[in-house]
Structure formats: structure tokens, C-alpha cells
Length: 219
Image (cartoon, rainbow, N blue to C red; front, top):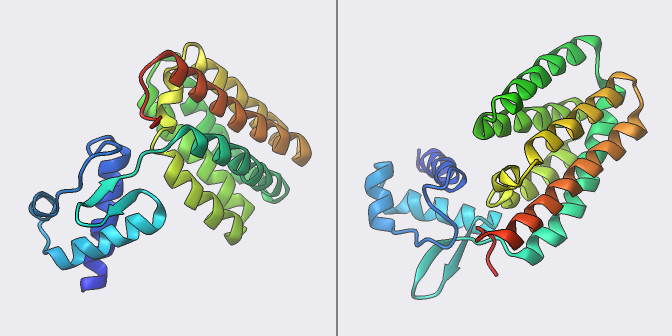
């Protein structure tokens, strides 16, 4: 029961971090979090240990836990790596996809296009994430899935905001459609290259936004 409670608490804390309710750098007040999650301190502290291990929180002796802040160096180091990993995932997905899988991906991309046309950034991001997850599922490679999942948790501290960069929403859509077009042609190498380009373009958009505006990236 305790194990289940701390797993549930960790998942809820992730949601609060990813939706910005608990912003980067904020103090994780144990008393208030226990009240909010309606749990005791034992499962909460176990959940916080999980978040620290994942890199989503940091523990400071005698001060407590804080939501992690992703730095520019983190972004610069992670994006090339996740570009390689997700590129490989779509390469394997292209090899494995059935016609039924392609039909399902078609529907996801239609959703993506609608949200881009309507300027719905949050909804676009959700559809975008579903597509990336679909590629990982189709790759059927647990080591890729685990590695990408670990890095994606860190990038989610900053990744959504790159869609606010001028022109980025339509550019992102174009990149996604290029990946999907290559997959439909069964050109695994082209799909891999297009996905790597997509991730590196996200990186550049995030860096540009950080230069132009105050950012969730810590300096």
C-alpha cells in the first residue's frame, strides 16, 4: 500500500511540475503537499526521492527539496542525444509499422494539423507527444523507450515553451509531416534523419526564445 501511495504521489507531483503549478526552482513544501495530495509524510518523502533520482527535483541539505531548473547546458547536451535516440526509434518504427498503424498515425497527424491551424499550443503539444509516443511504441525497443523516457522528463521542464517562438508552430508541423511522409514511403533512413532534424530545430527554437525573453531555463 505504501509503495502504491508513493508511486501515485510521484506521478501527481510530475503532473504538477509539468503543467507549471510547481514551477522550476520552487520549494516543495512537505506540509502543504501532504495536505494537497492527502497523504502522510512517509509516502511523500519516498515520492520526492523518486523525483530527485529522475532529475525533476533536487535536495539541499537542511533546506529540503526544490523543483529542478533545466540549464542552457542541460538543453545543449540533451537535445543532440535525444535526437539520436528518437531518430533511431522512428527508424525502427518505420520498419515495423503495419498499414493499420499508419492509418492510426494519419489520424494523429490530422489532429496535429487542426491544432496548428487553430493556434492551440497546449492541444498541439499533447498531439505531438502522442505521436512521439506512438513511434516509440512501434519501435518496440525497451532500451530506447527507457532512455528516451528518462531524458524527456527533464526536457519537459522547458520544452513546451519552444512552441511560442515566432513561426515555430507551423515549422514544427512541417517537420512532423516530413517524418510521417518518410515513414509512409517506408524510407527508414529518411524518417530517422527527419526526426533528428525536428529535435534539433526544437533545440534551436528554445535557445532563440531564451535569448529573446525571460525563460524557464536557469542561467
